[in-house]
Image (cartoon, rainbow, N blue to C red):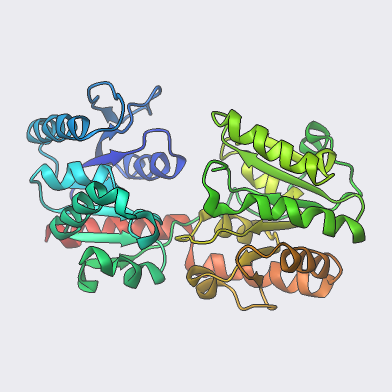
Length: 372
């Protein structure tokens, strides 16, 4: 097949984006990248293009970026412009004037909850972007209808899961070194909460803290490991105070988010993964936990109903209900047959639906389809 020149625009620090551009680099394509915000590091074999330094977000900053990106696209002359997120990076792809234009949406950037009245500027630009695109790639089926408020015809939407590397994310990894590092005793049930965006209330991390004392009534040695963004020091202190006020500070371990290479060991360490946001796209943590054989408790959202059958391969709980969450944890810890059923079903499902290489080849096929 023809070697393509593909220009990616997106967050230069996001693992999911770096993984995609690495994949297409390794497939032999000519990959260019405009990181937004500017990246402190670069990947070998990928040509980076720098925007002017970012200041405070403003209409003037957006206009400067639009003009800069238009000039870069004119010089690069890509076959495909691929923007990661409709909100933000997608704006610059839309105003570049280049076709075909692919927008990759991972969750909230196309769902209605992100667009309140105070975000009217973002809503206008994102709606314009979605009317200019040739294809919107979403990670779950519920996002097809969820994006309707941005006036995108369903014919221009393709569902391609994020995918997970099944060679790295697998069960039965040795977690002895990680247990020692975290100070987690072998006898302690470990509850893992990987949603590290502790500054965003929609992830309901306070509900997990409220549920922990109730869990410890049945499992006194239960430990919760919560990842967090290391730049969010104020929010971290707020979670620590909440845990202290609930009497579980010693069993609530805040761990700065780790490199993706380490994540399989965290899933293997965990007896249960919990993810209880009020709204979501399709988080890759669900796929990673499925691949590693980690039983899951999640809120009953649209995406979870695509992946889980309640009580079969996962437990679904109501939004912002710490008692239901605690009861689900206690039930799952005490039901080994249910846990084994979840482990088997979810690994099988991720192999069939979300093998990373197969998902990326579908994306590559979409490139050629649009060019033809």
